[in-house]
Image (cartoon, rainbow, N blue to C red; front, side):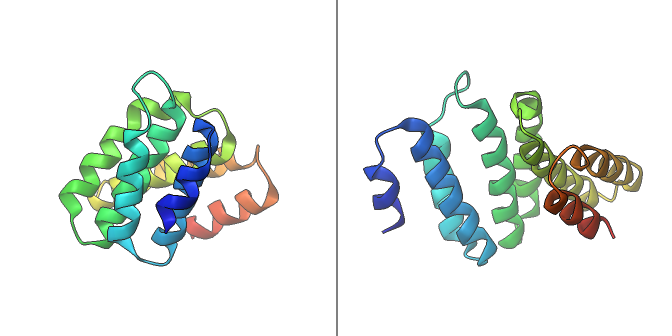
Length: 142
């Protein structure tokens, strides 16, 4: 059902955005295995040279799926896979989302110094975005 909607879309960018939206919706509903399947399918539609922004975000979302399934080692692996794509994320919301994933990774390995630095960077970066993004970033910090 989920895959059919995105398969209908002919443009690659629209298809990727649709898959990511579906995966995030499943993730928010704590349907981690289903979300992971969607993200894996979406990742397979991207390439190393194209869609780098999407690849970076997908790795972070996959890490969240693994956290939800209590697989900490695969979560950490996917958080680390996300790092090389940070510079390819050209929007404030995407960068804040990536920083949120990196904060979670540092929290998992009990690295308080890096966690605090990344939180500070995320709050500063969010000030360039919408008021909603600023509130979300501050709310997650406290």
